Length: 437
Image 1: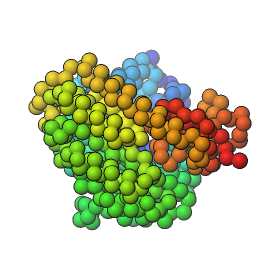
Image 2 (image 1 turned 90 degrees about the vertical axis):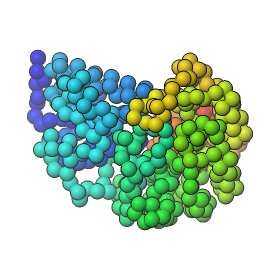
Image 3 (image 1 turned 180 degrees about the horizontal axis):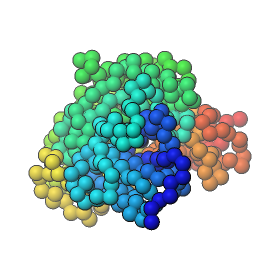
Image 4 (image 1 turned 45 degrees about the horizontal axis):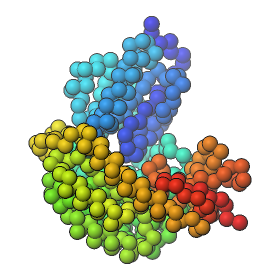
């Protein structure tokens, strides 16, 4: 039975994967709306007759989620619950031919850089005048700002360059214009994202220009926090820490994915850095910005990872005491140089090592959080949930880091406002506090 369409088309955009994918979805939505097309983001009321799935193709679990989501909507199309199904994003870029053959219910697949082709399916024109304008899907007080696309690194475990291409920086002027537009609509915090922040500017300005970009963003009225994500440790532009120290708007926070701490594993990963170089970078950051919060991610179970190499990673984490740690289990990705190695760490060992590493970090996080008890922090309120106002300090990014919970029955606050909160209790990944009197 076919879907009975009433009035104009209604489009539902489903986003899978990282914040960079979310920005891509926001650009899709902005372009469709500019062409007078009714579009929503992740509207599960089943009112849409057209669905766009923006996929992730990073690791096995992400690919599985993307395929299952496509199949879910392909089934809805077969039952007549939707009329059209389009798929875009990283998985579509990487496996387009296979997907077309295996899921014929999909009307068209598009790669990561094919937004104009996707729009053509709606008889919509790509509006170049909208560059720097974006309909955000996050809470209105914060937004992600993608400063570049692609990556020139050759990490042996990573397929991102296959899906996103070579590094392309966006001009500072264009990014400042976009940030001003975001501030005009109430955004107070912008989070800089890219496949790799620290490479920013080399293609455009023949130098690393992240520090210069930060200085420009700090001049924008209405923006109160600027946060840094995905900063590669090799050849890190150290002047970024000077800007962080001197500019109050730049959060004392940075996400530096280190991936491992054994020199032999780092060499096999082709990370172009060593354990000692990583240690010196962290020490320099903490010396320059004493209260900086450092988030990192590690990859366990890489081909050939021995117990000794894993123990080196554990000892490094215990020594460095990172504020936040994320852990991934190695996924054997075809067409990467790592795929030529034998995936010889069994799944059970990968899981055990991931759990062991997170157990170590859990104790570190608890200790660091307990040190915050009795101290007052500036907190940005993100939402109300379960009887609490839920917010964050400058040392925490949305969804992945600590949250500050404030009893909603005792105080009145508004989502999107800053307030001063004294911490009264602390758990491994949550803080509890009340408004300062």
